[in-house]
Length: 112
Image (cartoon, rainbow, N blue to C red; front, side):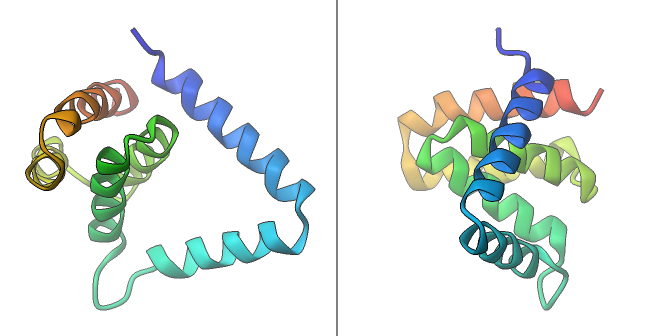
């Protein structure tokens, strides 16, 4: 079983190293990310749940881990998180059940 705390730390360290190595492009992506998830008409929690659902559809475990942590930080409940996963499954079908299941285990681990 994946240790999602460990995977989160690895993803964060890899991103920090990458963005430092690519200079202005890394700063630009960081600014885009911050602006995209900031409260607006949609709140941060909703935007992070959207990001999580897209991560499940795209089958990106690193993105699932990082956006799960962000969902928890933004105050997402397990029930709301599961609903976002169900939308991903509706849009992507069977393969999303595999990654949606991983996302729920990730939520359970990171929310302890």
